[in-house]
Amino acid sequence: MQQGQPKVIVFTTPTCSHCNSAKRYLREKRVKFKEVDVSRNQKAAQDMVRKTGQQGVPQLWINNRPVVGFDRAKIERLLSI
Image (tube, rainbow, N blue to C red; front, side):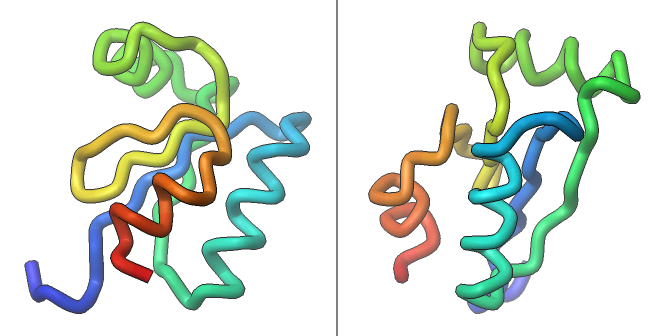
């Protein structure tokens, strides 16, 4: 993986307003991300809970480090922006 582009996965549900805010924020910062809808992907939901112990969304995994909720300060720190 090249240094410039972190691997970002956003776990969301269609009705989650904080998820939409997080995705909009990432787009504004021009950060590429993969979106996973945990309401449709049961395995991803189980993986997410196993990793963080949390069922809430959004969860952003930045280079495999989880951020639970739309924690802008932590997201910026992990993305170095």
